[in-house]
Image 1 (cartoon, rainbow, N blue to C red):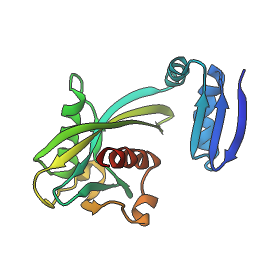
Image 2: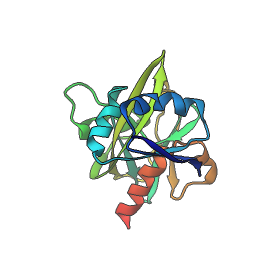
Image 3: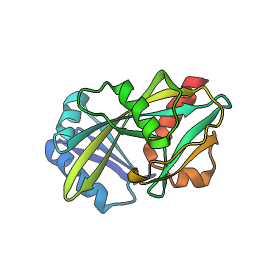
Length: 193
């Protein structure tokens, strides 16, 4: 049995043991309620609950990175008006780390990058032509061995700017970013402490 607890306290919707019907309707609920910024789900069998949730989507697997240069600056991209970290879809037969490095280089035009550690995995949903997708992104900590190399935005992907920024970034940058990016930056900060 499902119990909804404090549905909009701080923009967080909490479910206790949601059933399949509730999970299936979650996308429409979120779309209709922009005040919901986060969903918290509690379950006795979280793996089964997660699989029930994922069955409602077409899954896209992606990989990317938090690239740090020698000065401690982080590589950002401005994509479709949002500040983001470079990432992209994993191609058939490609390893996650290979995809992460390839996507960073393609989106920013910056090479001489190496992976130093795994950071975290994020999930977000989106809809195109009434088809809902679940994008699973694997994030890596990366190092660029050459100063503030000037990047070249991949315009075909909607990227208009590539910029190195010091953490913490300005509030305006985070305001034009996605919630999942904060999760990635927190994982990065925890790793470098």
